[in-house]
Length: 180
Image 1 (cartoon, helix red, strand yellow):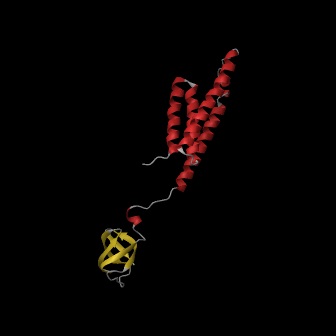
Image 2 (cartoon, one colour):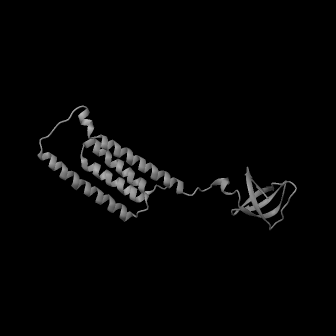
Image 3 (cartoon, helix red, strand yellow):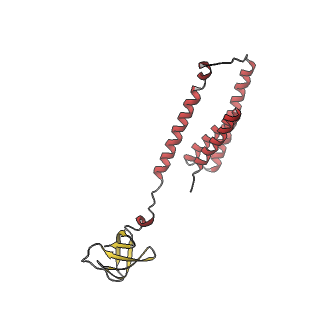
């Protein structure tokens, strides 16, 4: 399974968010936001160096800004809020979280739509050309399809193909290629 870089950054952001919740150390939250920013950079095609730079710059900037704000508030008289007042400052956090989830989901859907759909198994054989090895008619024959020898029969029971002719595979019926 091949996981894109942006998804690894999101896993890292969640991993950094867990200690934030358990220890209430805001630095983990700032590193988590830096990881989300790096995930966005990776999703838009930024290289590894750009991703790491965005992670470091955003994390360090947040730590510097938040610490200066915290020091400013520490000098003021502490005010303990309870009940509804305690939740007032958290609505912005919830809105930012919901917005980040929406952005990440949008990026994930965008990448999923851009990936080419690869056909596998017998679906990959339909529509391919094959070389007739033994006469193929409505009752059977042999072809070389994708480097392997297959039993084959014609789609139209009245037609036939001689060795050396090219045929197109219409469908696979069990272990028999139906050709025309």
